[in-house]
Length: 249
Image (cartoon, rainbow, N blue to C red; front, side):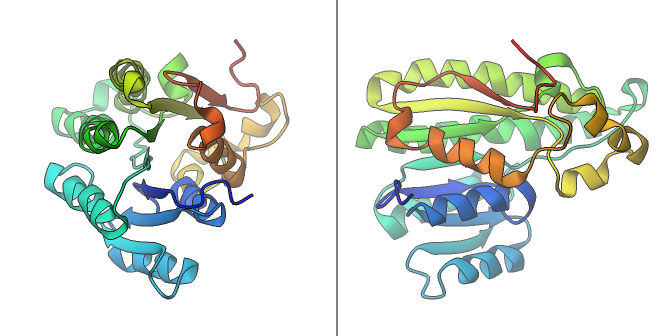
């Protein structure tokens, strides 16, 4: 389904897991993509796998906690392809720490990586999209931000809850300019993050999920691909649940 022909996309944290699945899905649907993450070698490797000519795929190092690093990525994509149509704020860390053991430095680091980066990305990309009169932003929230961290730490849950609120604010700001802003709230999706969680908690998850299994990265990527398409132009400020029925509302 090449429904993103001519579109350009930046996906943060796209060198592994869900981010990698997203960037591959967007490319398969016709978009030119910037693969970005802290592992520059892996970013360039994925970009070369997608398009060895470099015409439709670019890989670079990105530290989402630094505004200038985010600016280089977003402005770089805009300079290379002449426009920026899609931003997926996917990058994040998933620490597991009991509430009373979280120190200030770790709290600040998690909020900077998981929430402040979304604020920065929405500001930088939102201005470009507002000027061109078109854009799609998708922010990666989580079930943890809706019900509290069942497995993850309080700082992770707080950041993800903040993303849901921020998404609504930016959606209202940009709606008159042809730009939609939505969030996705995945839960229990197979991939590297699950390997970082306590195994005792992970082992019992499939039995607790109504559909009886973990999610697949490509299922989340397909939701993102829909939200950034023209067909989703009447959806903004929404948080889309991708959780196998763990939260029904």
